[in-house]
Image (cartoon, rainbow over the protein chains, first blue to last red):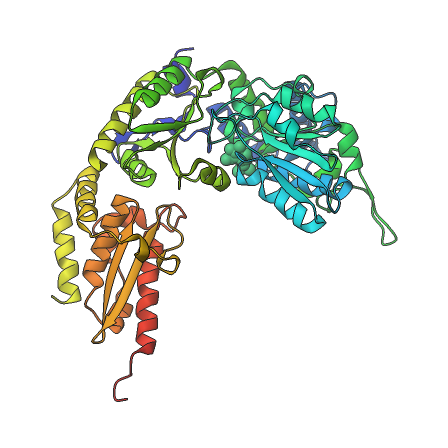
Length: 399
Length: 144
Ligand SMILES: Cc1ncc(COP(=O)(O)O)c(C=O)c1O
């Protein structure tokens, strides 16, 4: 499909900001949604809005079917073994908190260790810190290599007998490099340590097969992969999910409730307390269908990478085109990221600036923040060229 | 100039620029003209929280009037704070506390006024207000 035709599927792209055509390059934060997603959500709200799993009437059964079909669809998409391994959450953050809490309750005690990488999003750091504080466990930090990737050698050195889980990202939302998750999982499993992959960015850019990767948990958000906000997925290996206590208590997640003792339902229901995001979860299907059928123009990745690396005023973080996704975080000598973002905004270009929810990584890189441009399949090479042209103008204004 | 006159002046200066980028050019000029703090001046207690860029604000009460100095690592932000401290320096805490800071919206920086975490303009204004409030409490009351 021509890029222009792809754009027509996304109503949000066709607008002007400050009189300039919108160039949306903040896709790693939230991607725009295709009509198929917007319309499905509206249709469900209009005609199948009923609580799932509970009632016997027609609307409830339609809504339940849409919701449970999505679970089966996501199972297939991730190649999980069974639907009980697919838990719906409100997003990656909720998925990560669920694992940190429930896995932590079941398996982590005083003196144990959790490993995260220095390049993690706060969502994959803070829940683990909270767990460690609660349990008297400690958090160990895996460094990145000189390009910004995680290496299995470094990980192997960090694992000890006390390591209970390793939680790392498939792709960092700052560095934009695909980590060798299969090798990383293999190292952990050599020592019998389970691995959680934060796939918030990974799911968008890499074909994910959880069995092939060998991970024990994989977490992602719907809104970064063109689905409705407030949707998210946690894949968890069945043996582990079965051994974990619930994260939240409430309706639906129980087998039976009495004041003398409550028994819980099986996974995934055990982890889906309360009324779920019933009109939104089914949007994962058209969203993922879109994602499977389209990738960002590789010419954009090559062009932007080349422009940013050959400019002496610019330092790109996350290097090596081989593993690069179309996500570029960089610093400009003598120009503050916030100034650049403000100026680009007025030229119609939406980019991200600041710490990007990765303060420890900013400290590690020795910067107070960065500018980030992240591209999607609906972005055109012309937009990438316009971005570089405007970036140069902005730098000239500031330096 | 009175506080009112100074605000009118700023509004007039800004009305010359219709394009956003021209407004930014002007703020960048203002920012560059503002004397930077020494490293020793950039103390933690002067740092304004809530800004994506770092902003330091120092104040001094002289003869019942407040005087501000400021710096930032981002130049547009520095231009904005330069405007603010130009307008409010040399006025009494009571005058500053009574002001509604509405002229910021009038000069079209309203977009930058949204109380988002990314933008520190609100924090800058709150800090100036807080300083004025505290200085007002410390100052001797009329007739005392
Ligand atoms: C790598 C990574 N992990 C986790 C998250 C958190 O996702 P959400 O805010 O959708 O829960 C993000 C989103 O920015 C991310 O990029």
